[in-house]
Image 1 (tube, rainbow, N blue to C red):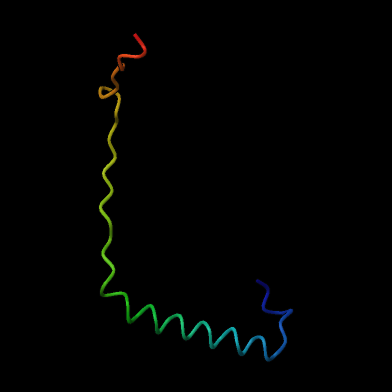
Image 2: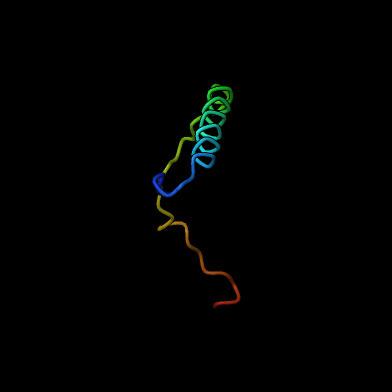
Length: 53
């Protein structure tokens, strides 16, 4: 988004929204837990079902 093409009123609304978002983020940040991602391969787990035999 280019800030140069916005009117003064639009810039003001954008800044208010940005401040509101930052305030909301700071309030909910303590409750957000980072997910642990475990990468693994399923190479040895594939099985042939009976209908394929």
